Image (cartoon, rainbow, N blue to C red; front, side, top):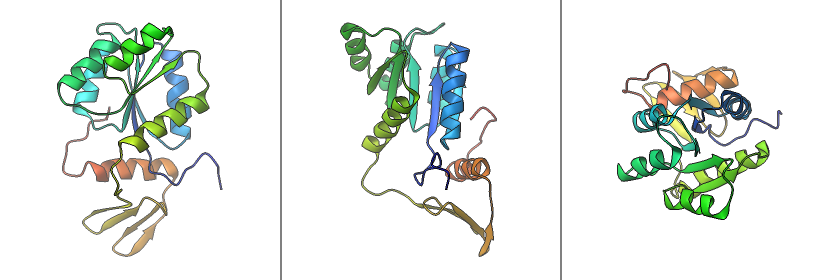
Length: 184
């Protein structure tokens, strides 16, 4: 079995990063790890997407155009959005990290970073935020998805899906009855 595919459910991750190369590197690695990744290139777009979408965790750069990362997170927290936030920044002094955490960040990782550490921190943030009972099956009509076994059935017929198809179906089922944009 491929070791990059985990039995855990795919995370919905929003990366708010203006450096296209860094954002692409993270998005590629997180997608290959089985997660669903959306990207925003500036703070205003990131705030809009974080407010409109339902994400499991956000990765936010501190220094962003149009709206800095600290202000973005402060606004989310003021609106009652408790989505875990990992600040990712080249600003690595103690005062910088403290400001990020006091602004509402849940963790802070300094650039450059090891991808394995980023992934582990994101998964830890989500684990901390989960309540005791977690859903392992989703059902919409006669369509059922088992998140642990990674199986899909419809009318008692097993449907074989590729990992990306499975992740997309899971996202659609979690958002059943809602309008889902292409960006989401």
